[in-house]
Image (cartoon, rainbow, N blue to C red; front, top):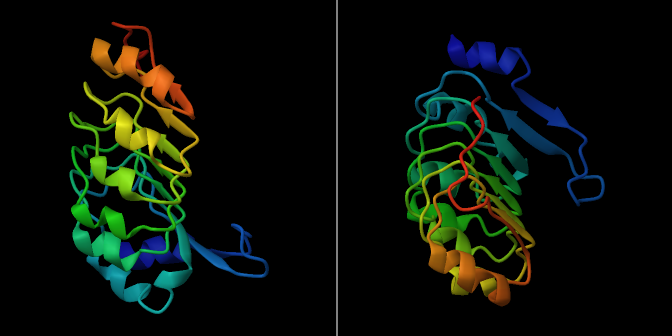
Length: 186
């Protein structure tokens, strides 16, 4: 019943958004603010014939603690993945199958370690990890990413070494808060 309600309420929308493909239709899966604790298994079945046309999934502001490898391999044509405001602390290794991903929003989660699998994604332009608990960042790996343009690490307790080493090595925008700064209350 929940799945039927999500589909009927246009949580899954077939749109003519151009996402860089002339005349191509993209399917946007918007499951934000649905109080999900896991990705609904029934969605895989509903979308099985169109997974290659899904370019944006938003699961923002739910209660997700993890994503499965099946999620990553099923939706491997994603261009944008919005996971902000959940309880995620790691990504599955299969995130490396998202070879077309351009933007990922992991802000306001519970990451203590930088998800290094992201550094293997050739098309990734934007990473948002604002308001997590990340201390260390693989600066050299980030500097080697060909498409990366921006990474938001504001309101993370980054160590002093990252703050000193990163600026001369990077060719993209790296947003950091002043040392000791705290995020404003929600």
